[in-house]
Image (cartoon, rainbow, N blue to C red; front, side, top):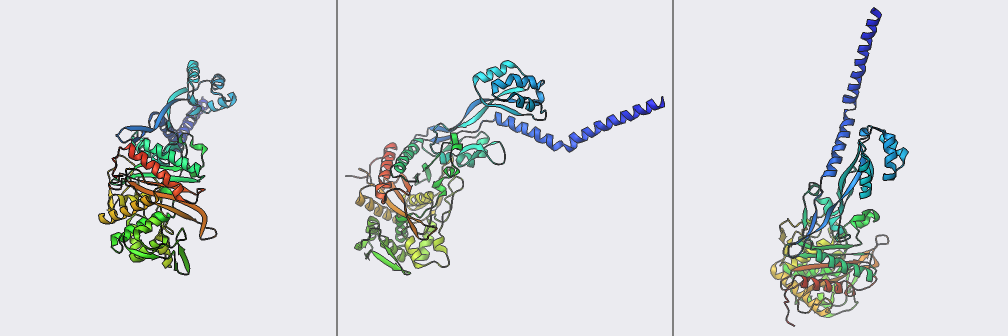
Length: 528
């Protein structure tokens, strides 16, 4: 009797000991494990329920067009802990979901797994078949996927939604999807300044240009100068965010804000504007062009190898004379020239609301061992490296009467003045010089409108051998109407199979400018 009592007491304490250990094991030792499981389930349910905010473009009339939206689909998944007969459930589901029966049964027997995906995007027939089974632990949930109805349009602006490296939660990657990920994930919409019609035309013209001249890529930006509003921003090659996995990562980078290049002769406008503002030159200031200048044991020549004799600063832009830009820079002075470059926004980010903007480089002029020839070549765009957004924004400062604005793409933003760069008088003078250059060449001229602009055929540095390669970059920056500029356009193509920008980007500029003038119903400002 005493033995039986002792055995019962021992069994009682052993049972409670085991129970106590299990409670300690599950509530203390494995608390974090189950907490993570519960959190994961909550995160998954949130993912199913939340609708990501949409992204809209805004046209000339203020109408919005959705360019990134959500589409519904149904996902089928299992909660193994709720399944009563794993083998039977696997046998019924295998032909419907297209998965191996034995693997399904093994997965269903893992009761610690709260979620096991069966069908990602289920058809109506599959959903009906699953629901008709009425199996406990098998669920159908409505989910969403990110859809871009215009496919490749403005892909560098938009970015895409995908899975990042640290978790399996859909996250905005690149572009606005990344920059505004927090707001979009909280179901807030994003309204952008991009005009869907201008963007489409810009991409069409750029695509045709790249194909025709077999260029490796290019960029187009249209900016409203008085506000800094970006109306179109396109680059090639681009990608389709609906199928981003089919493209190399390099396609996701945004050349408009992330690529740097030496701009070439378009920079002569910046040099002239600086000299005019400082008062050391006028449009009619003359010098004798002998076709070449020797500095630091090297010779700078005009692109056409010609000597033009006595010419004005306006002629310098008309002929695109390298030696004339060198002369103007010598009148400005090296220190002043570098200061004006910085005032125009080179060597710093513009502040545009797009991710990972590159600062460019003024290193060639800021080195301790900088030489006379470094400033001379910088006067016509060799040495300093800029981004397309920096260059179009600098030209916008001229078009807006000398005031540098912060470019922006979020329609809820307000125009923001960065600083006055040059006087209104100097801006008007250099605009007139640019007009004269356009009228002389005629290729960019538009009937009924005053157009100001400048071409640039830029050499590409050869980082292996030193110096410059035979490959070129063509760019043109211009604005219209010159009397009251409504837009500034930059067009750039990389490594085209053509030697002259006048045959590539200039006709493309004219075509896009004509479209923009007509699209906005901008009245002519020139009497023929």
